[in-house]
Length: 294
Image (cartoon, helix red, strand yellow):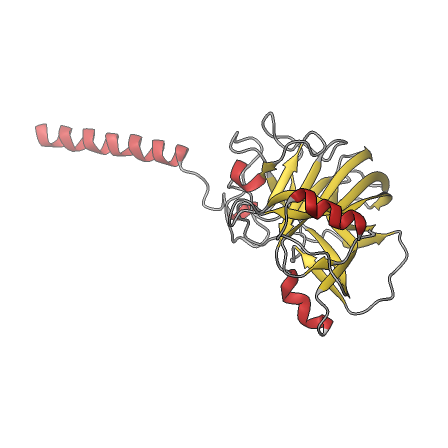
């Protein structure tokens, strides 16, 4: 009798423990459902309270296009400098206080890059490149069944990165003055990603140096507020920066939130040029004078 009671009690306890486990056990596909491809680092959910910057996969089938209002530059060859990759994630509106809520006036973003030297072979001996256009990819949502229109005014610049901390480039000296463009984006039902190109008038830059692109949001008039887009490339420290005060102070996005799944999709198009302005061998004051006089 005692053995029978003991076995009955043990079985009852096992049922209780199994029930508790099934209630608290996370879904098997919780991480995979946050990814377009099911691979890469976990994406923070806006209702988890983790991190500062939140990202979601761009819905499968979302159309992607480019929009450019400038005059095409006839010089060849032309090559890409900055972030490579496809639009994969978008920064989520909402989240915890202090998160990137959406693209609003006063926001600014920068991405550092040191891959210019890899394109020098295209220039057949020329030591410099001239950035003719800076591009940024944005996600424009549309939850209605009708097309909408969104107006965004952006400024862009190129900078010689501050490399005073070895191995960690930061936003630095503006060497390509800001250029501003207003885009009127047609947004189909379901939304779209659009690469927006800002025409630039830059000095000839040296392939050997490290640079940064800046995107500054001046105005946004949209039925549903757009977001910046991330590539699917693995992020790293000292790469992507965000400012909520128009560029006065900068936050390393990956340092603030290691759950970010990709890099800001910002890049430039360059052409070859001669006699580049010398770069990181001088003080900031001397460099500014060189670029001003070039």
